[in-house]
Length: 309
Image 1: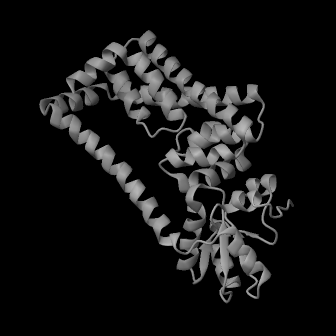
Image 2: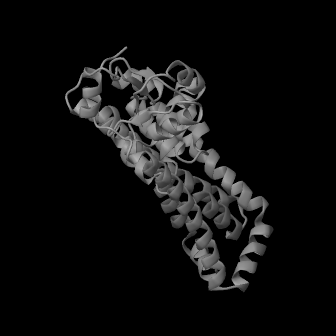
Image 3: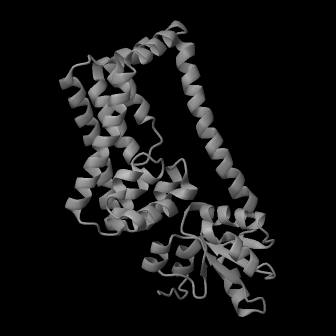
């Protein structure tokens, strides 16, 4: 623990810059905790705090700009790659789109404190082709608020943080190991929950060819679209598909309870959002519901018709 404190005191500014940058591009790093501790062990002068906040905000802004230009160049394809390293991949795409629909550019300041959404928001801004100057303004404002809040906590609770560091130092390497173990358990819990959901629906998934056979056959499958409304509008959808969201689960279950084949799709890694909605729909009454492998991307890549409303 003393080694960690020495590292922060010696290289705190660059450590803050690096960790805020890496967290902004999607790595699950405890930037907020590092900012609080760094502020607490930094000499409490106004100039030190201001420099710390500005460097942290710069790292955050640079990470956001990287994602913004990635979204602008690669479109929604980059979302799936980011979701694979996100702690909460099942909700990040949908929730980010919903927040942008509701608040527009100022949403950048809202989502900065929300894991998952904070990473996806700059990408969505790039996909939406938000004006660069507008993006920089709100992203900078969000970064200053985020880093400033952490620095404020570190300054206000300086003595408590010092006491905690002293207590952890008393236990030496075991104290640091305990912290690492807790963080590791948290990541393991999130991964196991996602893995369980994927495994639950892995055998039930169907391919694009399977879906085409159902559509050409006698079953007349119901196709549910689990993507945000903005993605459905911008990227098109499978003909005849019905949008589904948190507010329509019961209505969907009641309407299609008697159908033998219900298919659900999204545009996320491992069909995780589709599987999540399938699980919820089963709980409210639907018995037979299967995610589409590859979602809308696989459907389009196979040359099938994609329609726009």
